[in-house]
Image (tube, rainbow, N blue to C red):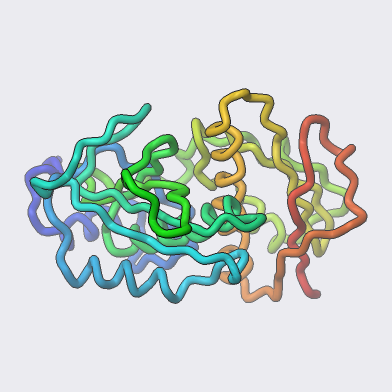
Length: 280
């Protein structure tokens, strides 16, 4: 098979990928099933209209916490003015996208939630992405906002999508305590959560499952390295976005809420984050 490196037309890349996974048109929920982190990119520019789409889409996304200010900035690493950055596990890409946020309570969860939806949207445009957990792009602070997370992006050198069922994840039954028999819809939401990307593929979440609600817990990081604890929280936001998109795909009325009567004793070394409540 011809390597994607030799193909200039990104539309052809999309056609090959969609034939490979058997889909004609990708929605955000579809991308959850097939997305993969891209670590090899074509060093070629994105069309100006594509860059404009990215900026416009970011303004329309639903945040986990709408009152938290978020902004994105796209950095062109192919420009002569680009200053090469060095960080652990950094991939070489034509572009890097920085997400900036105000630092109210919940901002790390919100950042992961927002950036994951943007990442899925980029996949529908034929653009690959890869989170750069320890990377910083900006040398100067952007007003009062913190540069929370950086994402590499560009056209992939090979496949944009993975084949269905090839993601390496913890078995869903090992992530859940089932208090009631879950409906098919709840299982669909949990499977979408299980497919969420996370730093070092650590999947720091657990679930307590009822017929119409899912309580979400996060692993308590024992690391003395602040970035590890930070990334765990961002990972949780990424996963919550998958839950929401799955519920939306199923036309369920669902909302996230932090309940006062949830015990942290259900999982050792885990803390309660929030619950998804599903209207019957």
